[in-house]
Length: 274
Ligand code: HPA
Image (cartoon, rainbow, N blue to C red; front, top):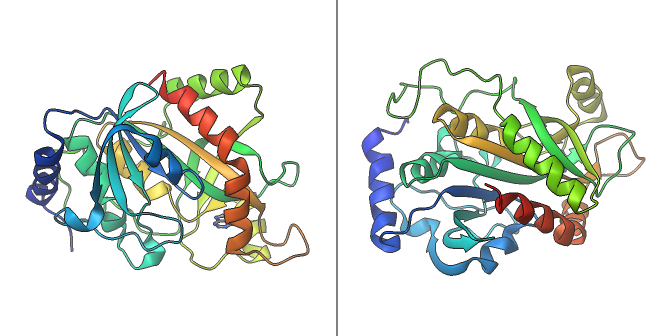
């Protein structure tokens, strides 16, 4: 079922009652490993997803399921601690619902982070990747259904989903921190099963550098409603078939925990400039 504009407004109105005259500028969707940034937001107002009209719960491991409003790196932010994924059973418009609500509340920028499989054999697990573009060819669009012109046009341009100006900020921040920051294309696979080795070979042929089960739907929706987007992947594991070992969720969570410090330093350094 497609949402109406009035439903998005209802969610935004509920949140406005809780946050008063605070206006968030940067929406942050934090994936595996970076959710803790929601806990260091200053002057926080935290709202559980379950309290907000029309919001869905986040059931993925390590995802807290609440929105935190406040200040981070001196910027007014709305942090989604935990996201909703299609593989949890949500439709794409359900999984990306919060982005439009945060847009209505004043956010003009979306920062997205995730853990992803590394498709490139010349890169290593544990490295960070600036997302320069995405491929989401094999699943339906979160914009399917009646277009809501209050948010954007029917056939949105997708030439620059990830904002070039923000990519430059990330490159400079990484250089200042002496961090290796890879750059590449995020290939969206809807999961929840990890890919087969044959699928990874196909992803590589199609131009994917990293593969993951999130992010792309939210970014499509954010761009449609005019938000600038900055995205990062933690390459938590080599994608299927590259190493002679099975993929596991534990490996992803361990890699996310190990990269937590450098990943958060990079994101906070960028945030200061957004
Ligand atoms: N594939 C898909 N999603 C992922 C992976 C992967 O290898 N690692 C972390 N998220």
